[in-house]
Image (tube, rainbow over the protein chains, first blue to last red):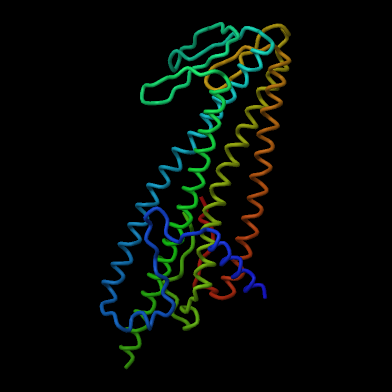
Length: 191
Length: 138
């Protein structure tokens, strides 16, 4: 009833997410039955150590992805600000007014400037390169960058979700293996 | 971060330890929703701060007596001088945009919370004390 519906929706969301392994993230095998899994393996400690190592690797990958996400998250408002500025310039151009501004010379110093209505803007492209564009071209370019940044951000989210799943699976595996081992020892001592 | 743990000390019954793939997927889904919820909570805090700043700014604007003085308004990283009405308009625009963002974040928060409490009841029903699904209190 309710649980099967929930299960189906989970299956659906797994199918929608497409391929199972993302960006080189190894998939953690889920252990259905600990007994069967341990039947032909010896050395619980070594397996626990393996799982722990895997967990550490996942944590490291997570740090990477989180750093990428932070960078993208800060890029998007920057692009948005530039787009806003272009809008203001366009509006002023229509009314043919001058713009009086205070702009940053350094962190603590602003300078006054008067901007004539203009058609051209310069965009900083990075790598010490700045190009002049018309207002429309600049808007188109910035909007494209905005779209790309958004897409990359959602991709990173996707990868993070998948990574988190693998981490949780590994954690649960470790806990279950440990429990199983404790029970086994208890049973052995009881004999 | 994600606060899902299966207790290492529970030795009561075998059914506790037997986790099916379906359960694992539910636990994973819960962890995802939890992480998403924390992120949404942070975003909401920032947006509310922004809204507060905008409200303060528009209050301050009302105190300005000289109607003709240009108001430097932040666009990107520079200040653009606008006259009183344009500045008021821009403030209103910015405020309504932030309010809309806040609304959509709150709606998503509610959605995520309901999914989480749903999964919680299911998982607690099956595992009882052997699983801990509470959020870490900061």
